[in-house]
Length: 583
Image (cartoon, rainbow, N blue to C red; front, top):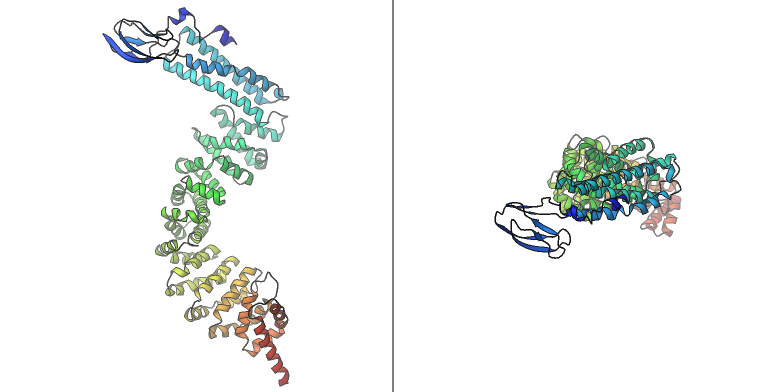
């Protein structure tokens, strides 16, 4: 009210108007000048053609446009800052209503945020009065500085109005408890200037070290939006702390969806490209956690995230490298982006990772990425083979604890290499059957099935010593592993030498009989029938089948119409009948 009653900047008195001689533009014109001038009062355009000693006024509102200067013509501002003051006063008029709503909250007097906000508003009003006095008395140091000061004042008033509204919306004006203190911190992220937000972020990082769950519980979507915006702040420490908090939040499913919907991916990608070492590490770990969603992986590609991820994978420290490799692996699970990844050089990168002395986790991610890339694209399979991928993968599998991904990548490539290459692959698969994880053994058995396409390769596999290892897998707990082993044995016993080796194994027949169990979950029973049918010509094996309860199982399998079960049952019972009469 003081501003409008005591200092009317929009309607200054005539004596003040005459004193407005602030220079807007000098025109070197000792004789005359010709130009279009925009009136600051009514915005009317006037074409001026005048001698330097002439006074020119606006034809619409009579505002003085040009005054004599003794050899130089200069444009006057009239009231040069009227337009800016109009904006400022329109915002000042909103403050009483805003503060009235603000003060009506029942907990207004109990919350520190309210007191701080009132102090900020008061300081802004004092600044407005000071600038108004300077403008009226024409004591400003310079026009550009005054314009900057007025723009700053206008922004501060807007910030105060916005902050008051946000405090009402965030529902933090309540009794002070631990959770409310956290919510207060989160609310402070949305109000005030950058320096205050920097301090709040530092506090929030410390709170999350002690009680991350409390922060995630108190978090609302607007808090996430504020954190995302702070990742683009001009302050390095603000960017680092913001992405540190976001990195922790990305582990929460609730926050994960908010981060994506609040458009966190573009600033995360920018931090990968040009952030500090700390910011890059936190950003890539965040993307790793978010990229498990196929839709998010597509968005990362769309925002140009592949190139910086590949760069970090090549040059980053071990933690960043592993996170980047995992992110690229997750992205490679989306079929439609695999060609884009290949064009960025991902195949050679992943093969190099398998060859280098890096964290074992990075190698596993590289193997998984190659598995994904070779899953359904023949062109990418040929590319992997041409980049020496087979030899690299085999060397990786020869390690102490081979994992599934490397075996599956080999499995995908079997159809793209020559039969001669099979002789290099099989010894590594035998090593996997001996030392690999259960999933890796299952993948190895499945790969052997793909290789066993001719009698020559079947004999070669049998000679490698894998049959006893496959028989041991029949006793495992995992149904998938038992099925893969039974299928591999079924494909191998069509060669007499391999069939004899199965017969010689002490546990071979009995393990196969146990797989005849008619449970719907037992998917290995059809392959067990095929193998037992191949062994049925041996009287010894037939006796083992009978003593193991094969007849009872086969009767049930015949009812289920399992292929080959009826014929196998007839052969076993025929043998029993001959044995009876021979007595």
